[in-house]
Structure formats: structure tokens, C-alpha cells
Length: 252
Ligand code: IPE
Ligand code: MG
Image (cartoon, rainbow, N blue to C red; front, side, top):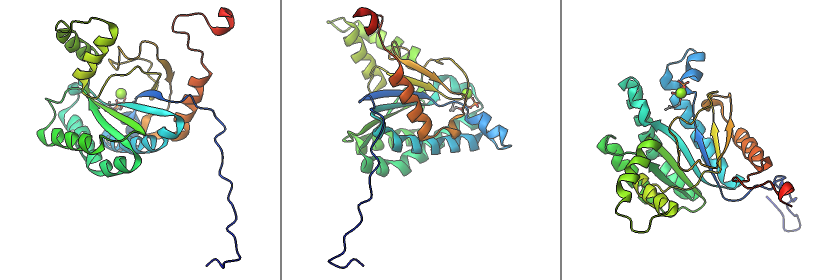
């Protein structure tokens, strides 16, 4: 116990050495769960479970890196082609995640949204999604968007089908319609990370990634750490984004 004359030694708090670009939208194609499990002699479901742990780690670490929106590809519409037992297992994990993480999200100021189709999800999961979204709606530190039964091409197609009703036609008003289709909003991606070694977009955020920077990693998603996320953000900060204009050095 401290006596009145004693003082607590000040522990220096490490100052961040990196000047992060504030307010980034980072999207991640979290690939490699199955291969991670197979390489360890485990069933693929163990890879998906380990992948859910990575999601928890990354969500906790993201806000201090200046990330305001984090979109993760949890289940692609193309994944329905997989054996039913695997897809149902992933949906069960998502349900479990919502049940265990909603309180944590509220405490951490995380707003959680699902983007993608909802009509093919089990009714109980749909309800859990709606409950989590409502409960976390006031979170302002991080917008966590989980893409579930998501296909960018399909979302763009549905937005296009609705667009004829819009009187003021512009790329911005199209983005607004797309955001309505997705329900969890639609904002421009700054940095897209794909784990697991493949180098493709796999029908993820096609409209939103028009000017995104891409970082491809060999590492499989269950092995991805907060340090890997930080390294990707630092790599992003080193790149010059011109959006088709001339680099500053040449433009003068
Ligand atoms: C990514 O891991 C997670 C989902 C698509 C749900 P995979 O399941 O695609 O793992 P690999 O690519 O087979 O290793
Ligand atoms: Mg894969």
C-alpha cells in the first residue's frame, strides 16, 4: 500500500512512432483458413474457428492505427458452392461471434454491420444480426463491416436496377443507392489486404476499390497479427496516391 509521502513512479507511455494517416477504410480478404487447418492435420472448421480469433485481435487493434472502417470478407456468395456442412459451420461461427462480441463492441465503441444478402441466412442468425447492429449503432471508434453472403457484382447489379428511380444521376448518388442495397453503407476503400497468397479481388468491393492500394500477403488468415496489419498500414502510408493525377514531385 502506498504511504502518503510515496509517489507512484511514472511509467513512460510509449508514444507512437508512426504518424498514421487518419481515418482509413481498410478491407481484408481473409483467406487461407482451410489451408492453415489442413497443414496442421486439422479439419477445415478448425481453420475457420482460428480465423474468428484473428478477427477479434484485428478489431481490437485497428482503431489505434487510424482505421475508422474495417470491412472483412466473412462469406462470399460464391462460397455456397462449398459443402453445406462447411458453409453452415461458418454461419454458426458468425452467430457465435455476434453473441459473444456484441457487448465487447459496445464497450470498445465499435459499430457492427453486415453487408450482403440476408434472405438466405437462417432466421435466427438474421435476428442476431439485427440485434447486434441495433445494440452497437452508436459506436463511433470503428465501423466493423462483415461481408456475409456478399457479391460485389450482384450488389452493383441490384443498385443499377434501383437507380432508374433516382432523379439526380451521379456517381455519388449511385454510391448512395449501393449503400442502401448493402445496408451497411458503402465507402471508398483506401487499403485492401488479402492474406493466403492469392492475388485477386474475388468479387469483393469492386466499386469501392476503384483507387484502393493493394497489399497481398502469403500468410494465412489465422496467422495474421496486429503487427501484420500495422505493417500493411505503414506500407500504405509509403505509397503515393495520385488517383490518375501527376505525382507531387512532377506536378511541382
Ligand atoms: C477463407 O478461408 C474463409 C472463407 C472463405 C470463409 P478459406 O476457407 O477460403 O481457406 P482456403 O483458401 O481454402 O485455405
Ligand atoms: Mg480461399
